[in-house]
Length: 260
Image (tube, rainbow, N blue to C red):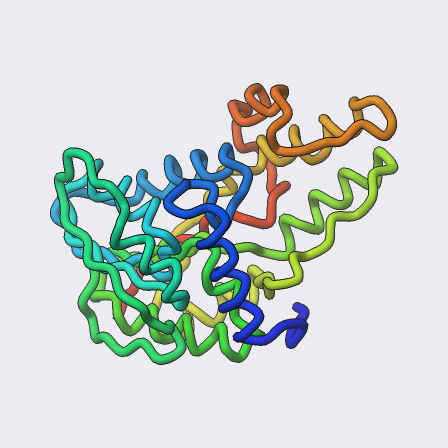
């Protein structure tokens, strides 16, 4: 895993720019809106009415609001970026079934003890500088779970990126590099560490695999030479409906349950 390619100030500035550029929109922090919609659908399958829930890295609050509209939950949500939290407090709420509390917070300094039934992180812990910081963050997440509670880790893993690039190489497509502001996880190392914190590995959900294989492998391979490919291409409407076979996207959900 790469490390120290960026600083915390780089991350703060990046998300200040995201706040300025995208405002309350769902494209904030993830410009591929199909990815955002699939992400929302996937995470919602792990929530349930009556749960006490924490969202780590809530950005502009787009996802949190969708969750309290869908579920009768008590949701705490925080983000490192004060600019994004400022927007989160302005998000319009439709017919909410649950409640949400937004705040500025840093998972490296977070201190709660066995408060939550469910915790989910959304492309957040991958923004930390290195594996050592990520271990601190994971320790704080697990400490905040009730025994029997679940951590829904929606982050980026290097294995999915490697698989995607191997498929691209077979079609003479260039390699997709790890994002400059991310430190992708090693899946086996992550599972071993979280299990050492008193959790069991439950399962994983590579819910974006079909879409990424279609949009990042098939589409660029079929496109006329020098034609610009972007997530807005209409063919991606079809690819986003593909079943999530294989492991061809770095972003996926790994689920853990606290046992002690």
